[in-house]
Image (tube, rainbow, N blue to C red; front, side):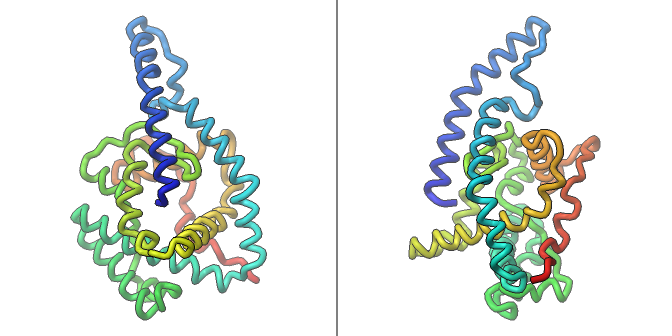
Length: 259
């Protein structure tokens, strides 16, 4: 996470903290009177009004910048080049996941991820080729937000971060430890670091283009529910009544388009 992104996260958290007291006080007074408080429309989203404004900002940026760039990337760059680029970033994520699996005392998962990282970084030429999957060494994705969840840190309210998207009060500050052990922080040449971040963002946005049609109804509520339930599943905290199954195919190979 860059300094600009860290600043945006910090400002968002500060703003939400300042407005939270009024929301919770209003909800408390309404409960004492036996009335429903309309400001809390979702049990995990007490700051929905502000989150929706940030979501609207993100959607505008995506509509006029991120999505057109991703579509152009898909049109101009052939799949046989995009795939190794995606593999490279996935390899970096394997290292991050391995470190977090160790912090969670999940030694089998840590071995899988660090093994993948070692094999793909060497035999896979810096991760551009996914050799580890061909020998059935599976991924066990994790991050510091999941580590905190397994340590018992509460999820906290849902947050929509400017430029970064869905998060929670637990996951937002957890981005920095993951950034600290990531590759971008190890790049001393700032222009190179910015190019790395830009290509990463472009790769991520291009990957999800094919799944936008699956989003129905209220986009904000849809993405919020998907994010919260997928994070709980990853942390082993999914409740029995969670039946939101969008994204079941997200682990499939989504970049098989022909050039």
